[in-house]
Image (cartoon, helix red, strand yellow):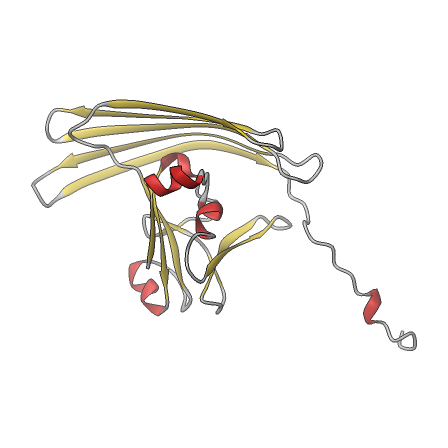
Length: 198
């Protein structure tokens, strides 16, 4: 298993699970803009969807509300969620922290003309309850002309501490993704023609 924590994600400026997975071992992201399928290829066997907190998650996980990414390899990855024999890539979302109150803001621009802003707000309410609010505004472009991948989202997570070893968590997310679906590779079969067969 490879775990990529929040500090490492900030160090490499990874904004989503795709950019984080290339730092993992023997795993790479699979993305087909033609049908908007997202997933992961672990140890070579076959494609599997991502998961979030060990539940299947069919949307590309963004880093704005991510505490860490986990990449489990091999059949044992199925023990920790819904996956296949190659393994499972999962996103663990941010949780409320009991002992610190903070607000963190970030902004970035890229060389393709995209820009992004995030906000994290953590508020402990007493000793046993904490709320965490994460906000995202992303206007992304790629190296392709006229490409766009825009996303706005808000994520609220709460944690109630029942005892020292038991807690109850809840979370909800509301967002909008606006992206163009296009083919990124050129398929060419003319060179295989033997000039005889029709």
